[in-house]
Length: 227
Length: 242
Image 1 (spheres, rainbow over the protein chains, first blue to last red):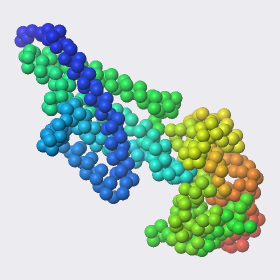
Image 2 (image 1 turned 120 degrees about the vertical axis):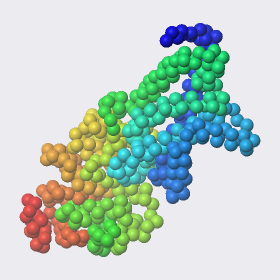
Image 3 (image 1 turned 180 degrees about the vertical axis):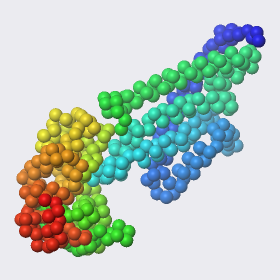
Image 4 (image 1 turned 90 degrees about the vertical axis):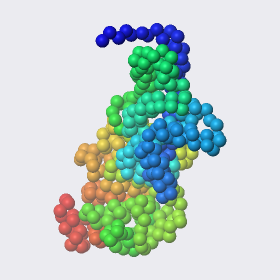
């Protein structure tokens, strides 16, 4: 085997790779918070909502968790086209990511809420806090702190899943790789470079989310113990 | 004077199990009432009915001028009038001691942050834990946590405080420090109802003791009652306990 590595495409397509990396990061960044909000709302609805809310949240969560992301993306992208709603591939990608990660986050947050001892909710209610105040100030912070590592994993998985968005021609990292590969026929080298970039970006995201955890959980920062 | 709590033939069932079978009891403002009795006698259930943690199934229950048996009363207003301290403390682990105390005054009574902090320091001094204000619950001993729970309840300025076996999870030394706080509260004129297994404490502090048996108030009296029980059931209970 005398394969000759040729990374010369890096010079010509370096800018495209950079733009693709930024788009991947940006797609992830704008999907995390809405995804968390959708997921948490679903978890709350599924646990404490009236029956129709519980049912609706369950249907959403199960429908999304049991179909492939790529199908969801197509369905959204082409479905909207049928309704003659024209939408940029980037926005379609973000909407699909939010809907997708929301369903997984819902299950993680549900586990978080369910792990809180009943006495906590009883104590909040006995201090005359309303249901919403109890949720916001007592249950939510504890739930998030307990499942934070799982949430971080989920958001990293979501970042990796952005690679599917090349299917609707969003020029994120993987999409850029397809193109370079098509022009240069240097598939092995291109995907090697892409893998290294993903590794770097994921490491960065993990560091940011871990750092964020230190900021939002002062108790954990000070004591270093799990809740 | 009107009683602050009036049980009139109160009944409460969990499914087919009738736990309260007609409890009648008056609690006057400024007094300390101890509910004693065996496990399963209904004393904790009776206590929990007072702040509507349990809904009664029959009879009448008046608390701070509200008829709890009718429904339609303002639950959150009731909870502001009636504080409760639990056996398991139930402090919020993600908040510091001061934040635990400030939460309800700030969110429910909408007082400012500085005012809430001053209030927290005031009630913490009352339970002798001012220096722990910025610690987290898990950094405190069980007895200290329970005293914080008492302070947290006090910060809402309740008209009536309920104590549900608050020393049952503590060793004798820690029990002592918690009981001292409760005794000080009693001296300050706070109306209190406590479910307890501390007979000596009940005898010393309580103005009235209700011995509960089979879901009713079997024998009612002052501290003297424990020395000279009238019913054989109470006789047996204090005989085994002391």
